[in-house]
Image 1: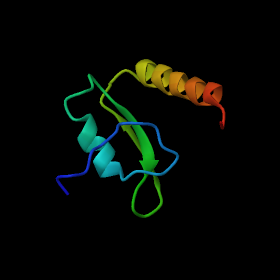
Image 2: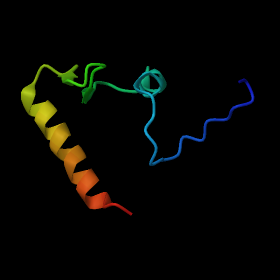
Image 3: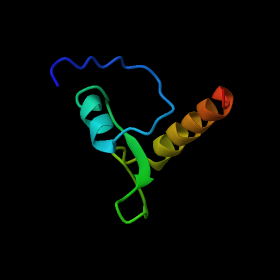
Image 4: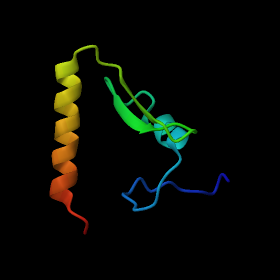
Amino acid sequence: MSNVIELGNITRLDLPADKVLDNLKGELEGIVYVGFDHNGEIYAGSSYADGGTVMWLLEWAKQQLMESGDD
């Protein structure tokens, strides 16, 4: 698969979590993550110890999603 070129564009298709995480390695100062584990249970965590920072980032992400609409 050496001839596959990753475009890095936005998609409406789900992507494998491992692929997304691998692509972020070395790119972020910290991370907040929310998702489902293989049993369908919600899984959440953060590399930030401060709950205020986590909440601010979640609210920022929420606002970005709400402003982007369903275009």
